[in-house]
Length: 123
Image (tube, rainbow, N blue to C red; front, side):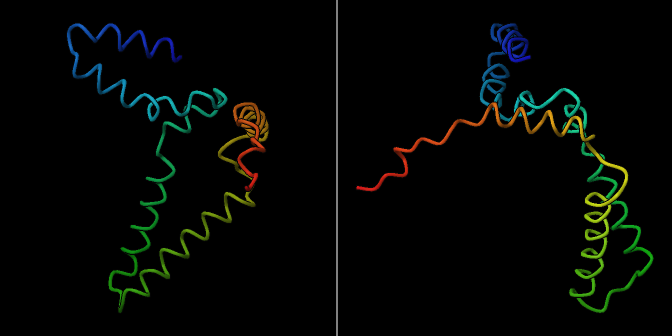
């Protein structure tokens, strides 16, 4: 995947040097998902859950229509966020399957550099 990204940058370099430079600068951000298991890629790319959550907050706010103060709005949004948290934490439906989460944990352990003891020594 990273080789393909570099090939795209190289193909743009002669015709569009500014875009190639921009893509080179943005490489860490644009390829941050690459070490994750492939099953996670589509869900990482998508912001549908955030959009759905925002729609639910808007829907509930539209039902209430008038809030007496800022604290009441905060309570409503907090309640919606708490419900979402509980659904994701304890619900039957999961955003990522258990199998893909095991792959993720394995991937993270492979890519994390071991702690260097010399960093913790004090003089």
